[in-house]
Image (cartoon, rainbow, N blue to C red):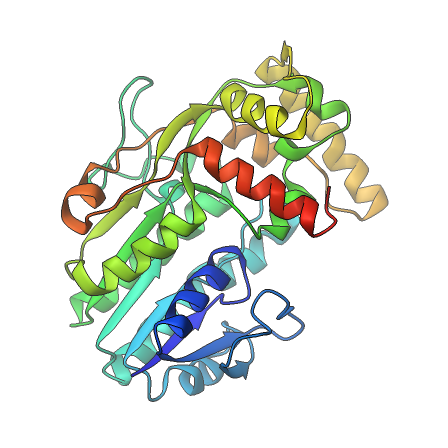
Length: 325
């Protein structure tokens, strides 16, 4: 059986790809030009190099595959990347769906996000049936992940067998993007502050397990949330600080000040032409409590989840072993 994985060079992708190769499957990956193979360079893979936005490239990648895991996406909260993010997250998904239909792929497993679901009032957990209600926040990542799901739904309406997974914020070993961009791991002045809001979190290895369970046990047309715990941003930062051997943050930064700081850094980024550590979009995102229930995945897929502390320990150990900390 030949399996295609998009986004295989990334954080989640390399964990999934390793599982599939270890299980003896013939794995093909669609790799963006210039993307590093460091995390999977020891694996025997068939590689197609090209852009997920290019229909013909995607056609070559899907051809002959029975199962497709679509993980490729652009995670960014910088407005400068909004057009590219739309093309990758929406047009790229549309290309995958159309080619899966043409090739009569047996099943597409699409990785979306809890950010594509919407939220409930504070104190209540959102689930797979919660309506998307985040347009007013103008968070391009959330909007494009939701629109990507719409493309998958269109394919399902045309007869495509597809399952959608919505992981929470992923942590664990091998996340190079996070250590470079995430202010939660900052060891400078940002380590002194925390903000209101919160996230559903999940271990990346649990998500990789969930992808395989969704392939084998998921029901076509269904969406499954993968989340282990719902934590405030203070709780997240406190745990990270503990494993870094640092003092936890002590100052809660009021949202108006945080937003003003973000706008200031946005303007500085225009001058320096470097991505800001905090953006206004990130500030709006961090105002929300993204809390979710994974009851359906536990019951229908048999999911079990590691603790957030275990995820952070693995992440910090990996960063230290690889010279990032």
